[in-house]
Length: 187
Image (cartoon, rainbow, N blue to C red; front, top):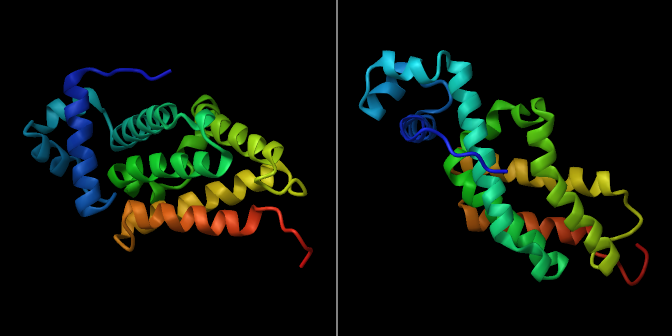
């Protein structure tokens, strides 16, 4: 379920995303307030601490990723295209929130958020195995860890400016499927 926020809080989060993208996650609250065109007191009224602001950004990023997962309509295509669509959604949202990739496993601290973001990926991987597009000798948890590890590293490339969303997504899909597509002959 995607929650809507107060419009003023949304503007503050938009400004924070811009500031942290431009200056890195070490940017200060005063910089965020200035970018939003408000005083620090207003920022602190909505986000009483830097941690609260970062948590708000994580929630905003998760909501955008959830929306992009829903928009990807992965059930309408085969597993490889579904993975590509999910990856494009992650990279598109990631272009705005890529700096969060360098903050660690914040979403994993909220089990419900982690479930909402992870379950569609697991279901798609399970379907890929059932369709014969993904190897059946690897447990779903291994496939999930491989895919999300690649996505996380690609988001770090975005955050560092080393790759754009399309390039990062193409690399993730290519490397992932090079390793998980069934082989006709054993190596």
